[in-house]
Length: 97
Image 1: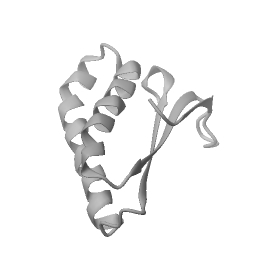
Image 2: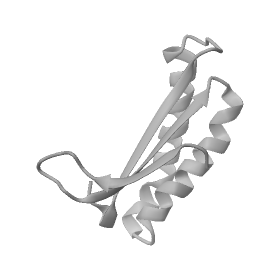
Image 3: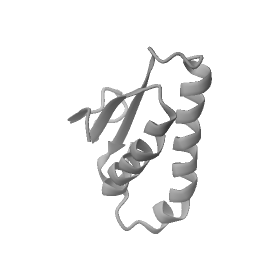
């Protein structure tokens, strides 16, 4: 997956849990949504593993991701092809964020 993946420690003073963070910039094209959402769900699933609660909400998360990307491309960028949508996804180890 294109983009930058960082491994580090949260900067929040109340939590020092290690995390993995993904940064991605998408061109404003609707055809980019589905492949990116699929890749992002794979990334998220790496950290949710076999947790039963994660499986229950997975579909809702995927729908929310797709809708957020579509809204950002259509409304946030005012459908300008020279704009990009930046996505940041952070997952703490052991399900802690």
